[in-house]
Length: 384
Image 1 (spheres, rainbow, N blue to C red):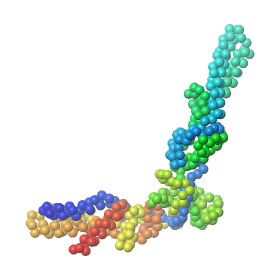
Image 2 (image 1 turned 30 degrees about the vertical axis):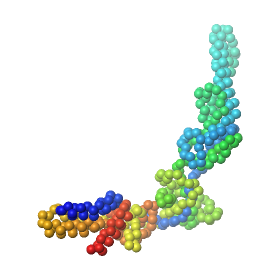
Image 3 (image 1 turned 135 degrees about the vertical axis):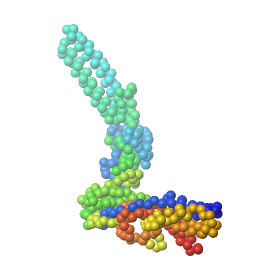
Image 4 (image 1 turned 90 degrees about the vertical axis):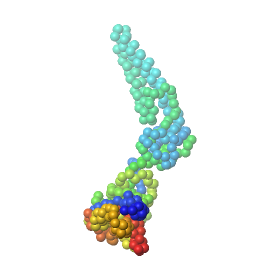
Protein backbone atom coordinates (compact mmCIF):
# COMPACT_ATOMS: atom_id res chain seq x y z
CA UNK A 1 0.00 0.00 0.00
CA UNK A 2 1.54 3.37 -0.99
CA UNK A 3 1.69 6.42 1.25
CA UNK A 4 -0.94 8.29 -0.71
CA UNK A 5 -3.44 5.48 -0.17
CA UNK A 6 -2.58 5.22 3.54
CA UNK A 7 -3.02 8.98 4.02
CA UNK A 8 -6.33 8.96 2.15
CA UNK A 9 -7.65 6.04 4.22
CA UNK A 10 -6.56 7.72 7.48
CA UNK A 11 -8.34 10.97 6.60
CA UNK A 12 -11.46 9.07 5.55
CA UNK A 13 -11.60 6.77 8.59
CA UNK A 14 -10.78 9.32 11.29
CA UNK A 15 -14.39 10.59 11.71
CA UNK A 16 -15.64 6.98 11.74
CA UNK A 17 -13.19 5.99 14.48
CA UNK A 18 -14.10 9.11 16.52
CA UNK A 19 -17.83 8.38 16.22
CA UNK A 20 -17.37 4.69 17.03
CA UNK A 21 -16.08 5.62 20.48
CA UNK A 22 -19.41 7.35 21.19
CA UNK A 23 -21.62 4.57 19.86
CA UNK A 24 -22.93 1.90 22.22
CA UNK A 25 -25.30 -0.96 21.56
CA UNK A 26 -27.81 -2.76 23.75
CA UNK A 27 -30.22 -5.67 23.47
CA UNK A 28 -33.98 -5.26 23.00
CA UNK A 29 -35.97 -6.63 25.95
CA UNK A 30 -39.52 -7.73 26.62
CA UNK A 31 -41.41 -5.77 29.28
CA UNK A 32 -44.91 -5.12 30.58
CA UNK A 33 -46.53 -1.92 29.33
CA UNK A 34 -49.83 -0.68 30.74
CA UNK A 35 -52.38 1.89 29.67
CA UNK A 36 -50.52 5.20 29.82
CA UNK A 37 -52.11 8.17 31.60
CA UNK A 38 -50.41 11.54 31.24
CA UNK A 39 -51.26 14.29 33.70
CA UNK A 40 -49.72 16.80 36.11
CA UNK A 41 -48.39 16.22 39.61
CA UNK A 42 -47.34 18.51 42.45
CA UNK A 43 -43.98 17.98 44.16
CA UNK A 44 -44.49 17.76 47.92
CA UNK A 45 -43.22 16.24 51.14
CA UNK A 46 -45.01 14.63 54.04
CA UNK A 47 -45.47 16.60 57.25
CA UNK A 48 -42.87 14.53 59.10
CA UNK A 49 -40.25 15.52 56.52
CA UNK A 50 -40.33 19.18 57.51
CA UNK A 51 -38.72 20.31 60.74
CA UNK A 52 -39.62 23.48 62.55
CA UNK A 53 -36.76 24.96 64.54
CA UNK A 54 -38.26 26.49 67.71
CA UNK A 55 -36.84 28.23 70.73
CA UNK A 56 -37.80 26.33 73.86
CA UNK A 57 -37.07 29.45 75.91
CA UNK A 58 -38.15 33.08 75.43
CA UNK A 59 -35.37 35.28 74.09
CA UNK A 60 -33.99 37.76 71.57
CA UNK A 61 -32.70 36.66 68.14
CA UNK A 62 -29.13 37.88 67.88
CA UNK A 63 -27.90 36.11 64.74
CA UNK A 64 -28.80 33.70 61.94
CA UNK A 65 -26.06 31.39 60.68
CA UNK A 66 -28.08 30.38 57.60
CA UNK A 67 -30.36 31.92 55.00
CA UNK A 68 -33.20 30.54 52.83
CA UNK A 69 -31.81 27.91 50.46
CA UNK A 70 -28.83 27.07 52.68
CA UNK A 71 -27.98 23.38 53.04
CA UNK A 72 -27.60 22.22 56.63
CA UNK A 73 -26.42 19.00 58.24
CA UNK A 74 -27.69 17.49 61.45
CA UNK A 75 -26.28 19.38 64.42
CA UNK A 76 -25.29 22.48 62.41
CA UNK A 77 -25.86 25.87 64.06
CA UNK A 78 -28.76 27.82 62.53
CA UNK A 79 -29.52 30.67 64.96
CA UNK A 80 -28.32 32.37 68.15
CA UNK A 81 -30.54 33.84 70.86
CA UNK A 82 -29.95 35.60 74.15
CA UNK A 83 -32.32 34.49 76.90
CA UNK A 84 -32.76 35.82 80.42
CA UNK A 85 -34.47 32.52 81.28
CA UNK A 86 -31.32 30.62 80.27
CA UNK A 87 -29.17 32.99 82.32
CA UNK A 88 -31.28 32.26 85.40
CA UNK A 89 -31.25 28.51 84.69
CA UNK A 90 -27.46 28.29 84.37
CA UNK A 91 -26.93 30.50 87.43
CA UNK A 92 -29.24 28.28 89.46
CA UNK A 93 -27.45 25.16 88.22
CA UNK A 94 -24.05 26.49 89.34
CA UNK A 95 -25.52 27.53 92.70
CA UNK A 96 -26.97 24.03 93.18
CA UNK A 97 -23.56 22.50 92.40
CA UNK A 98 -22.04 24.63 95.18
CA UNK A 99 -24.86 23.70 97.53
CA UNK A 100 -24.38 20.03 96.65
CA UNK A 101 -20.72 20.15 97.60
CA UNK A 102 -21.56 21.77 100.93
CA UNK A 103 -24.42 19.34 101.62
CA UNK A 104 -22.20 16.37 100.78
CA UNK A 105 -19.58 17.62 103.24
CA UNK A 106 -22.25 18.08 105.95
CA UNK A 107 -23.63 14.60 105.34
CA UNK A 108 -20.14 13.10 105.65
CA UNK A 109 -19.54 14.97 108.91
CA UNK A 110 -22.90 13.83 110.32
CA UNK A 111 -22.09 10.23 109.37
CA UNK A 112 -18.72 10.39 111.18
CA UNK A 113 -20.31 11.88 114.30
CA UNK A 114 -23.06 9.28 114.23
CA UNK A 115 -20.54 6.41 114.05
CA UNK A 116 -18.68 7.91 117.02
CA UNK A 117 -21.92 8.19 118.99
CA UNK A 118 -21.76 11.99 118.99
CA UNK A 119 -24.64 12.51 116.56
CA UNK A 120 -28.20 11.26 116.25
CA UNK A 121 -29.64 9.07 113.47
CA UNK A 122 -32.32 11.68 112.83
CA UNK A 123 -29.69 14.37 112.17
CA UNK A 124 -27.86 12.10 109.75
CA UNK A 125 -31.12 11.31 107.96
CA UNK A 126 -31.91 15.02 107.54
CA UNK A 127 -28.48 15.66 105.99
CA UNK A 128 -28.98 12.76 103.54
CA UNK A 129 -32.46 14.01 102.53
CA UNK A 130 -31.15 17.56 102.05
CA UNK A 131 -28.32 16.35 99.82
CA UNK A 132 -30.60 14.22 97.66
CA UNK A 133 -33.06 17.10 97.27
CA UNK A 134 -30.30 19.35 95.97
CA UNK A 135 -29.02 16.62 93.64
CA UNK A 136 -32.51 16.08 92.26
CA UNK A 137 -32.91 19.76 91.37
CA UNK A 138 -29.42 19.88 89.85
CA UNK A 139 -30.05 16.75 87.74
CA UNK A 140 -33.35 18.18 86.48
CA UNK A 141 -31.65 21.40 85.41
CA UNK A 142 -28.80 19.43 83.81
CA UNK A 143 -31.30 17.41 81.75
CA UNK A 144 -33.05 20.60 80.62
CA UNK A 145 -29.75 22.15 79.55
CA UNK A 146 -28.72 19.05 77.63
CA UNK A 147 -32.00 19.23 75.70
CA UNK A 148 -31.05 22.80 74.79
CA UNK A 149 -27.65 21.65 73.53
CA UNK A 150 -25.69 22.89 76.54
CA UNK A 151 -23.16 20.66 78.29
CA UNK A 152 -23.70 21.26 82.04
CA UNK A 153 -20.35 19.70 82.94
CA UNK A 154 -18.53 22.28 80.82
CA UNK A 155 -20.43 25.22 82.35
CA UNK A 156 -18.13 27.48 84.36
CA UNK A 157 -20.23 30.65 84.53
CA UNK A 158 -23.86 31.66 83.88
CA UNK A 159 -24.69 32.29 80.21
CA UNK A 160 -27.63 33.72 78.30
CA UNK A 161 -26.38 32.52 74.88
CA UNK A 162 -28.65 29.87 73.33
CA UNK A 163 -27.63 28.19 70.05
CA UNK A 164 -30.33 26.51 67.96
CA UNK A 165 -29.23 23.58 65.77
CA UNK A 166 -30.72 21.56 62.91
CA UNK A 167 -32.23 18.22 63.89
CA UNK A 168 -31.65 16.61 60.46
CA UNK A 169 -30.02 17.26 57.10
CA UNK A 170 -31.99 19.47 54.75
CA UNK A 171 -32.44 22.85 53.13
CA UNK A 172 -33.60 26.02 54.87
CA UNK A 173 -37.00 26.69 53.38
CA UNK A 174 -38.05 29.85 55.19
CA UNK A 175 -36.98 32.09 58.07
CA UNK A 176 -40.13 32.79 60.05
CA UNK A 177 -38.94 35.45 62.51
CA UNK A 178 -36.85 38.52 61.58
CA UNK A 179 -33.46 39.23 63.09
CA UNK A 180 -33.42 41.08 66.47
CA UNK A 181 -37.02 40.12 67.22
CA UNK A 182 -38.17 38.88 70.62
CA UNK A 183 -39.76 35.44 70.70
CA UNK A 184 -41.70 33.45 73.24
CA UNK A 185 -41.01 29.83 74.16
CA UNK A 186 -42.07 27.29 71.47
CA UNK A 187 -42.14 29.98 68.77
CA UNK A 188 -41.13 28.57 65.33
CA UNK A 189 -37.97 30.36 64.21
CA UNK A 190 -37.32 28.79 60.79
CA UNK A 191 -38.35 25.82 58.66
CA UNK A 192 -36.00 23.18 57.24
CA UNK A 193 -36.99 20.78 54.48
CA UNK A 194 -35.27 17.41 54.35
CA UNK A 195 -33.10 16.80 51.29
CA UNK A 196 -34.60 13.38 50.53
CA UNK A 197 -38.07 11.92 50.53
CA UNK A 198 -39.86 13.80 47.77
CA UNK A 199 -43.39 12.86 46.74
CA UNK A 200 -45.63 13.65 43.78
CA UNK A 201 -49.39 14.13 44.06
CA UNK A 202 -50.90 13.26 40.67
CA UNK A 203 -54.25 14.73 39.65
CA UNK A 204 -56.14 12.03 37.72
CA UNK A 205 -59.60 11.25 36.43
CA UNK A 206 -61.55 9.34 39.06
CA UNK A 207 -62.02 6.24 36.88
CA UNK A 208 -58.26 6.10 36.18
CA UNK A 209 -57.22 6.81 39.76
CA UNK A 210 -59.32 3.89 41.04
CA UNK A 211 -57.23 1.53 38.88
CA UNK A 212 -53.87 2.62 40.30
CA UNK A 213 -52.32 -0.03 42.56
CA UNK A 214 -48.94 -1.46 43.63
CA UNK A 215 -48.39 -2.86 40.11
CA UNK A 216 -48.71 0.55 38.50
CA UNK A 217 -45.62 2.36 37.27
CA UNK A 218 -45.15 6.12 37.28
CA UNK A 219 -42.52 8.43 35.82
CA UNK A 220 -42.04 12.09 36.70
CA UNK A 221 -40.30 14.28 34.13
CA UNK A 222 -38.36 17.33 35.23
CA UNK A 223 -35.70 19.25 33.28
CA UNK A 224 -35.46 16.43 30.69
CA UNK A 225 -34.80 13.91 33.46
CA UNK A 226 -37.07 10.98 34.26
CA UNK A 227 -37.64 9.85 37.86
CA UNK A 228 -39.39 6.58 38.67
CA UNK A 229 -42.14 6.74 41.27
CA UNK A 230 -44.09 4.11 43.19
CA UNK A 231 -47.72 4.20 44.29
CA UNK A 232 -48.33 5.07 47.97
CA UNK A 233 -52.04 5.81 48.36
CA UNK A 234 -55.22 7.24 46.86
CA UNK A 235 -56.50 10.24 48.82
CA UNK A 236 -60.07 9.73 50.04
CA UNK A 237 -61.27 13.12 48.79
CA UNK A 238 -61.16 14.72 45.34
CA UNK A 239 -59.56 18.10 44.77
CA UNK A 240 -62.25 20.77 45.11
CA UNK A 241 -60.90 23.03 42.35
CA UNK A 242 -60.15 20.45 39.65
CA UNK A 243 -62.65 17.76 40.72
CA UNK A 244 -59.93 15.20 40.12
CA UNK A 245 -58.72 12.39 42.34
CA UNK A 246 -55.35 12.82 44.05
CA UNK A 247 -52.87 9.92 43.99
CA UNK A 248 -49.68 10.00 46.06
CA UNK A 249 -46.45 8.60 44.57
CA UNK A 250 -42.99 8.35 46.13
CA UNK A 251 -40.05 9.42 43.96
CA UNK A 252 -37.24 6.84 43.83
CA UNK A 253 -33.48 7.25 43.66
CA UNK A 254 -31.37 10.38 43.87
CA UNK A 255 -33.48 13.37 42.81
CA UNK A 256 -31.31 16.22 43.99
CA UNK A 257 -33.00 19.40 45.17
CA UNK A 258 -36.60 19.83 44.00
CA UNK A 259 -38.88 22.82 44.48
CA UNK A 260 -41.86 22.03 46.67
CA UNK A 261 -45.18 23.03 45.14
CA UNK A 262 -43.87 22.80 41.56
CA UNK A 263 -46.15 21.12 39.01
CA UNK A 264 -44.45 18.60 36.72
CA UNK A 265 -45.59 16.12 34.04
CA UNK A 266 -46.22 12.59 35.29
CA UNK A 267 -46.93 9.42 33.34
CA UNK A 268 -48.80 6.60 35.07
CA UNK A 269 -49.21 3.08 33.69
CA UNK A 270 -52.34 1.25 34.82
CA UNK A 271 -54.00 -2.09 33.96
CA UNK A 272 -54.42 -3.76 31.55
CA UNK A 273 -50.73 -4.60 31.02
CA UNK A 274 -49.42 -6.11 27.80
CA UNK A 275 -46.03 -7.56 26.89
CA UNK A 276 -44.03 -5.58 24.38
CA UNK A 277 -40.47 -5.16 23.16
CA UNK A 278 -38.84 -2.17 24.86
CA UNK A 279 -35.71 -0.16 24.08
CA UNK A 280 -34.03 2.82 25.67
CA UNK A 281 -35.62 6.11 24.66
CA UNK A 282 -32.23 7.35 23.50
CA UNK A 283 -32.31 4.79 20.65
CA UNK A 284 -35.33 6.35 18.97
CA UNK A 285 -34.79 9.03 16.31
CA UNK A 286 -36.33 10.56 13.20
CA UNK A 287 -34.52 9.61 10.01
CA UNK A 288 -35.74 10.63 6.56
CA UNK A 289 -39.17 11.43 7.98
CA UNK A 290 -39.73 8.16 9.87
CA UNK A 291 -39.15 6.90 13.39
CA UNK A 292 -36.23 4.48 13.33
CA UNK A 293 -33.69 2.69 15.48
CA UNK A 294 -30.27 1.76 14.17
CA UNK A 295 -29.27 -1.91 14.18
CA UNK A 296 -25.97 -3.58 13.23
CA UNK A 297 -25.88 -4.92 9.69
CA UNK A 298 -26.29 -8.69 9.48
CA UNK A 299 -23.09 -9.12 7.44
CA UNK A 300 -21.04 -6.79 9.65
CA UNK A 301 -18.59 -9.50 10.70
CA UNK A 302 -18.00 -10.59 7.10
CA UNK A 303 -17.33 -6.99 6.13
CA UNK A 304 -14.74 -6.67 8.88
CA UNK A 305 -12.98 -9.83 7.65
CA UNK A 306 -12.94 -8.55 4.09
CA UNK A 307 -11.63 -5.17 5.21
CA UNK A 308 -8.74 -6.86 7.02
CA UNK A 309 -7.84 -8.83 3.87
CA UNK A 310 -7.94 -5.71 1.72
CA UNK A 311 -5.40 -3.97 3.99
CA UNK A 312 -2.65 -6.31 2.73
CA UNK A 313 -0.16 -4.81 0.33
CA UNK A 314 -0.14 -5.97 -3.29
CA UNK A 315 3.04 -6.02 -5.24
CA UNK A 316 1.50 -5.18 -8.59
CA UNK A 317 0.94 -1.46 -9.17
CA UNK A 318 -2.30 -1.96 -11.16
CA UNK A 319 -3.72 -4.09 -8.32
CA UNK A 320 -2.75 -1.32 -5.85
CA UNK A 321 -4.88 1.21 -7.76
CA UNK A 322 -7.78 -1.22 -7.76
CA UNK A 323 -7.37 -1.82 -4.01
CA UNK A 324 -7.28 1.94 -3.36
CA UNK A 325 -10.65 2.42 -5.04
CA UNK A 326 -12.17 -0.51 -3.13
CA UNK A 327 -10.89 0.75 0.22
CA UNK A 328 -12.18 4.25 -0.47
CA UNK A 329 -15.69 2.92 -1.13
CA UNK A 330 -15.58 0.63 1.86
CA UNK A 331 -14.42 3.40 4.20
CA UNK A 332 -17.75 5.16 3.61
CA UNK A 333 -19.76 2.10 4.56
CA UNK A 334 -21.49 2.35 7.96
CA UNK A 335 -21.95 -0.92 9.89
CA UNK A 336 -25.47 0.11 11.00
CA UNK A 337 -28.76 0.30 9.18
CA UNK A 338 -32.00 2.17 10.04
CA UNK A 339 -34.98 0.05 11.07
CA UNK A 340 -38.40 1.70 10.76
CA UNK A 341 -40.46 1.14 13.94
CA UNK A 342 -43.91 1.94 15.32
CA UNK A 343 -44.14 3.57 18.75
CA UNK A 344 -46.59 1.85 21.10
CA UNK A 345 -45.98 3.63 24.41
CA UNK A 346 -43.38 5.32 26.57
CA UNK A 347 -42.47 3.87 29.95
CA UNK A 348 -40.02 6.01 31.90
CA UNK A 349 -36.69 6.03 30.05
CA UNK A 350 -37.83 3.16 27.81
CA UNK A 351 -40.13 2.97 24.80
CA UNK A 352 -42.27 0.08 23.54
CA UNK A 353 -41.99 -0.51 19.77
CA UNK A 354 -43.15 -2.67 16.91
CA UNK A 355 -40.65 -3.52 14.21
CA UNK A 356 -37.85 -5.01 16.30
CA UNK A 357 -37.65 -8.35 18.06
CA UNK A 358 -36.55 -9.14 21.62
CA UNK A 359 -32.89 -10.13 21.71
CA UNK A 360 -31.89 -7.99 18.73
CA UNK A 361 -28.98 -5.59 19.12
CA UNK A 362 -29.57 -1.88 18.58
CA UNK A 363 -27.70 1.40 19.00
CA UNK A 364 -28.64 2.79 22.41
CA UNK A 365 -26.15 5.69 22.60
CA UNK A 366 -24.47 7.76 19.92
CA UNK A 367 -27.50 7.70 17.60
CA UNK A 368 -26.58 11.18 16.35
CA UNK A 369 -23.17 9.94 15.18
CA UNK A 370 -24.70 6.99 13.33
CA UNK A 371 -27.16 9.30 11.63
CA UNK A 372 -24.35 11.68 10.63
CA UNK A 373 -22.25 8.83 9.20
CA UNK A 374 -25.19 7.52 7.20
CA UNK A 375 -25.93 10.95 5.79
CA UNK A 376 -22.26 11.46 4.85
CA UNK A 377 -22.20 8.03 3.26
CA UNK A 378 -25.33 8.88 1.28
CA UNK A 379 -23.81 12.15 0.05
CA UNK A 380 -20.63 10.31 -0.89
CA UNK A 381 -22.52 7.79 -3.01
CA UNK A 382 -24.31 10.55 -4.86
CA UNK A 383 -20.99 12.17 -5.54
CA UNK A 384 -19.60 9.17 -7.55
